[in-house]
Image (tube, rainbow, N blue to C red; front, side, top):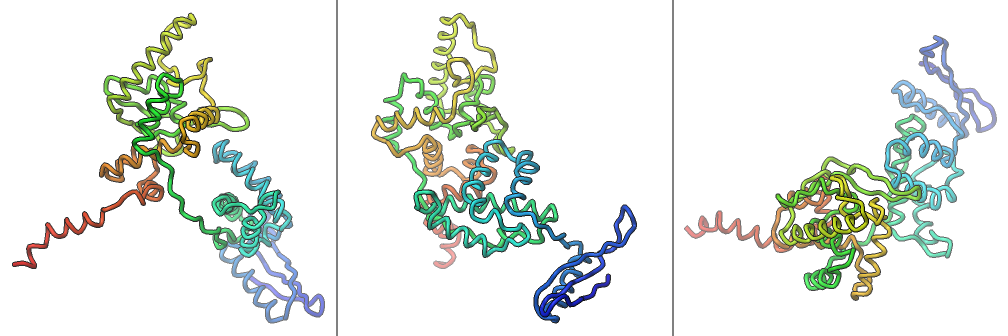
Length: 384
């Protein structure tokens, strides 16, 4: 591979080098780059370009802006590889917080410093009212941009991903919200007889996610063996509702049910059948939803969340989200001494690492237990 430098001005140079031959035409491929600086630094840049070409890492020059690339990435990669809900979220983050600030920057000129400056600006003045975004939201922006730029590197549009170097701001740890046993008991008693009650009961007893609860069908509930099978989830986007499979194989799982939940589900099933008979609809089919709307279709996850928020506020728990029922379930299992692998599988986490990341602070007094184990095993040796 050959190359040389030609002066174009007092401190400007033309870098020319051979890129090999075109595999289709057999013709030589020659590339030209402009460079400003001394002859010595121009020679260093030429050497770097030629080394990249010989190693297969050379990236063709392009005037494509970051915003133009994001259009292509959303259309040709994200729309195919992520769920509609995730795509919707990525588009919103990039449209509101990336494109207006650095969208005009050439993709190949994007550097870690550009991203660090962007994150700092979003923290200071990230929203229209002049208030900054939270560190957590800026972290979401970083992850969306990082994922997009990973694909740019895979497509050979950039040599390195600047988001792999730039770091998002640290997020202050916040405790997950849970209900005390007294509050959970009060909620169950006060909601009994209301349409929300069986959903809240099952959420608290199984730790199932909102979408999983609303996609549950009677064919996946075995009341005789006191088990149910999680197979699907309801996802809500601006385009409407859709039933989707779990994100990972761990999301598909079998969950054992406590006796009181089996009783409540029996009652719910009977009430559902009686209502169908009164409406002249006949017995519900096997694949009927456990918690449908009045038309027998999936309920809106957002509507159920609002219904819970209204009920929680009325019961004096205005700051407790519906997801807190899942957290409460996990915290009760941890308090019982159950091992993290079993808890992780019950919650449908991809790995116990995720469980520990969310609930690790609930595992208390384990170090004292470790000392007791060591004492029982080896303490007698030191007294002999």
